[in-house]
Image (cartoon, rainbow, N blue to C red; front, side, top):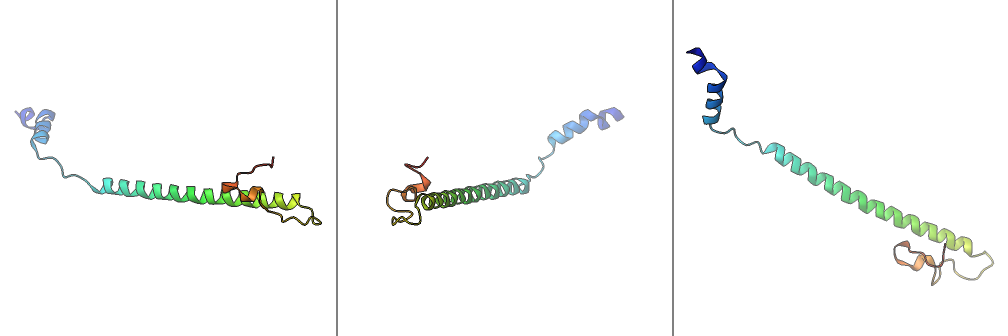
Length: 95
């Protein structure tokens, strides 16, 4: 008779008949918050990376324009048509 009330099957039946355990929302909220922070961090890093690339391209362009213009030359180092005038560092005419 002991096996009818204390075995594995009766314990499983009691567990199935018992009300479900309360939902744990904290792990879901924490996961969603962590995901949001990670996405915001990645967006910030991408923005900073793009700004660094544009700054480096602008500096390279100015350096190349300054090297192309000799000190005795009367032309400005970054006049119209130079790579410094193009959007996002696109360089035309420079290899």
